[in-house]
Image (cartoon, rainbow, N blue to C red; front, side, top):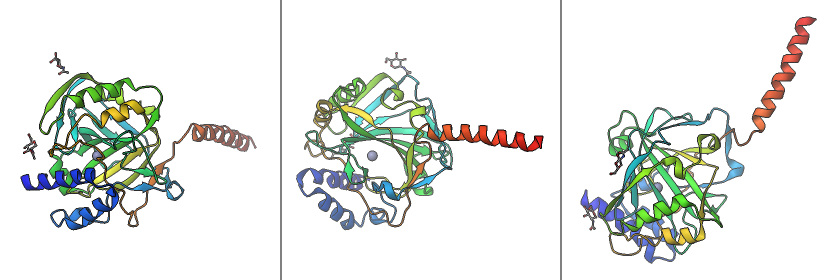
Length: 301
Ligand SMILES: *[C@@H]1O[C@H](CO)[C@@H](O)[C@H](O)[C@H]1NC(C)=O
Ligand SMILES: *[C@@H]1O[C@H](CO)[C@@H](O)[C@H](O)[C@H]1NC(C)=O
Ligand SMILES: [Zn+2]
């Protein structure tokens, strides 16, 4: 396990030294026989080409359970990124996911000096930062079990950040916590935290992309149902610069540019849920009125 972990750290840390990061990381993917999945055909992240996305009316909204509960969460620097552990009371159902999922942890992907650092890109555009909330399918007891038993053992929710002129006060909580876990292995607790502080309410999350993919760190297990929301989260430039300055990799180097390059689609289809605005509801309403009148008229005749 230790050697796998070291390799993982080395792989991620290597991006810091290389200006030609995309190329280097892709080569690293291919060079690691220890992680055969990293060279697989269902890898993440991807670039989403919006003109090629398939609209799918069978993608209903997700149900968020426990997202407004006040919780204490442990934050730990794992040497390659910092994880915010979530309790099992936070759960996820619906969204055409093949089961019930419970939350495990969340973490962020960022760049350096305020430059873009999201993992997913949209029509080639990289966003400032990306939040991932990792969920494990029931009844699996661990991440490893979920990753190895099921092609949708993990449900990952992804949110892209967009730069705003105003600070996002909840991101300051995250930055402060990261400042308390500067080195590999250090931990801290955030008390009285609500997941709903950093993600929008469920009614703003009806619109999303869905595809099947992988974890974005080795072993790149191809066991993830990805949900990437249209709705972006706010962060100011000051916060974006600050968040990438808090932690160090296990090597002691600054923890920056922690994102994997986009991977080939390899024939996969990206779906989009229907509810991108109020428009469908309005159309349905009028269709209802129109058809209702017509049927009524027909009966009368
Ligand atoms: C969180 O921690 C505080 C202080 O340690 C404690 O008083 C409180 O009960 C904890 N809350 C939960 C939900 O565990
Ligand atoms: C990083 O921290 C973890 C947990 O404390 C420890 O097991 C691991 O050996 C550390 N890695 C390095 C390279 O120091
Ligand atoms: Zn991630």
